[in-house]
Image 1 (cartoon, one colour):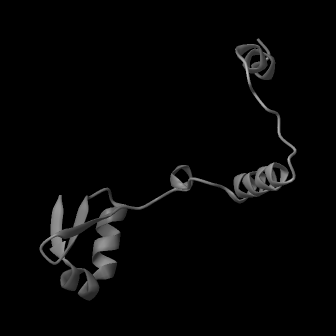
Image 2: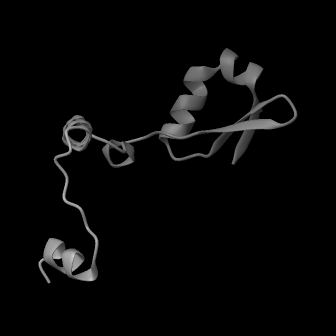
Length: 83
């Protein structure tokens, strides 16, 4: 693990990005109490795809219109889950 200052990072960003790409852990310290990890991300790290965001928006619109299924009993849960 490599710990650097924010100044060092600014001056040599390319070097630190390349090292992170090779799997090295890079920690950038900002002042005495703040630190950040520099890590590359890939598709698995993206929490919501555009498709998922659209599904969430659609569900929110349905809820606003009252197009929801109310679950009030364990039987309702079983029906919903197909049990």
